[in-house]
Length: 242
Length: 230
Image (tube, rainbow over the protein chains, first blue to last red):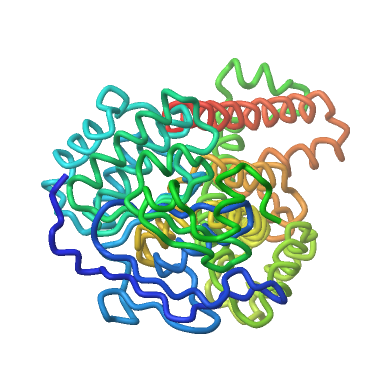
């Protein structure tokens, strides 16, 4: 993995972003700037808008109101951004084939694809499983392969939607190590999670979403040690945010 | 072909007339299935992946055409290819080519409709990943056709089955001419009308055997594909 010091898609700036789906307001008046640095972790209950936030940050969902800028540009093709969905879809080919496909889509020259695919397989600790049909891999292995596939285009920003949801502790640990490694290489990680422990372990800063709005944003220590809002205090106390 | 001889006896003794019938049947059926695939698969993929006014109507028509009556197709092709018809100058009436045309018309909607369903289902599954990977339009279509290939084998098989069982249209446009346009299905119809049931049954069994063999081959391809490609 190459270090990306030139974060050309950063900062990602949301200015008064609303997302409406019919009558439902999924995101409301979101204004935030995602800067280079340690991972930004989105937390919040189900339906708080975490996935939609990531889709907007990726450019997959257009705001109903407001605007998003990537390094000052409102129209920025997702060439240096990558997203891993909560349930990534594996193409019907081998693990190696999935990476080869992603590399071809990223415009990597044919002569370099095999070497690069093998590097990525090693990076996510799947070196021995390259020939295995991707859909036959375990949930954790599929997540790691999806992250490798996302890294194929050497992104500056990696958006992860609950990458450890429904994984066992061993698989979760390996994904967290991978996220740390990716972040250490200079890629900005923006990640949604339900797991407060994971948020504490990985985050540089925390964004708490509730009912489509940003309730609180703070550095990780500040958020966990002295949350400023009632909602954050309730969420950390394990109460249900309704 | 003598009427008193069973098809199995003729098969075992290598009767050239019987082999000619079986060979012509296979050639016409496979040609029609392949031509229909080249038309129906891109057409089905196009309808699956594009949004346009009247799309739902096109889908309903495409599905309805799966049940196109063979005699109607036979009549339409006959009228088109007869000397006074718009394509009469081609001189194709009562030739194997006319039979291929009729069968292609019958099989294309089946392959197109099944392809549309397969590709649309796969598209819904892959859509977000394609957007995330920034995959271009042409590559998307190629990927969907490739990744849906094992399901598309079933579509091709359905088309082949329809063509192999078909008699209504090809007897009209082919004329059931011995040694030239006589296929297994038209021969079965003729031998049954003559009361030569043993030969008709024998030909029926051979036809069924071929269809089962082709199905088994396609099933094997699909199973192997699922095992190795996931």
